[in-house]
Image (tube, rainbow, N blue to C red; front, side, top):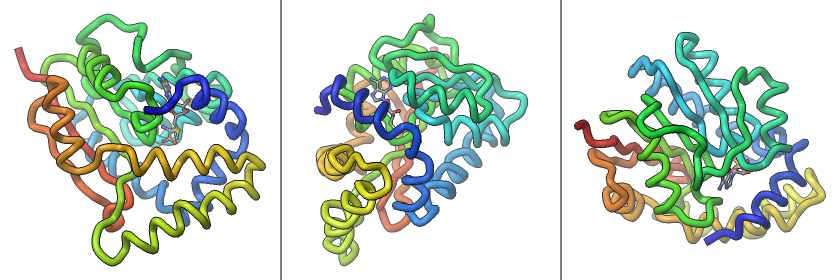
Length: 226
Ligand SMILES: C[S@@+](CC[C@H](N)C(=O)[O-])C[C@H]1O[C@@H](n2cnc3c(N)ncnc32)[C@H](O)[C@@H]1O
């Protein structure tokens, strides 16, 4: 599992170029992926939402715009990343480790984590912490990379391990942070491995939705009602 000190330092180093680099490397698809997540959440009309590992706040901003009645709180353990979220207009930000969230239990209708869980040092501990802060009946939504199947898998791996680190190194001057990305995606549970993990951590009604041929997936889990 990823080393927390390395992860925090790597994101601090790329914080200034993170948003642009994401858009270039995903050909703008990351904007659409976050819109798909937000459209789902909007239907639930949440009153209070926590975006964990919010980084530069891309998902939190989209939710804040699309759900104006919802109180959106963005947290991340990398102050350099979260400073961008605040300067881009996220009203409530808090530097916090996802493994030890500074909130009492049962306070959020929805918890989101986009491209964040994969970078955490202990996936089950992080998921249990997200479960704790959800209200009974509240939902967790995870957006993260997975690996496409079939004919797409080999060319995608070539892109991920050879093309992407070079392009990102050129854009950010921090190539090692993007060499780490490919390994983290390979090691991250996907599909039924992730829904099984969600169930073992106490969530119910978990399910997965692959997008863009499986390059990313949305996972949902619900905290059991009382
Ligand atoms: C790839 S970025 C994702 C940022 C944003 N959610 C997005 O969709 O672009 C991953 C973020 O996870 C954060 N992170 C990793 N481990 C964390 C932890 N244990 N607690 C809080 N944040 C963490 C990093 O600091 C980084 O900002």
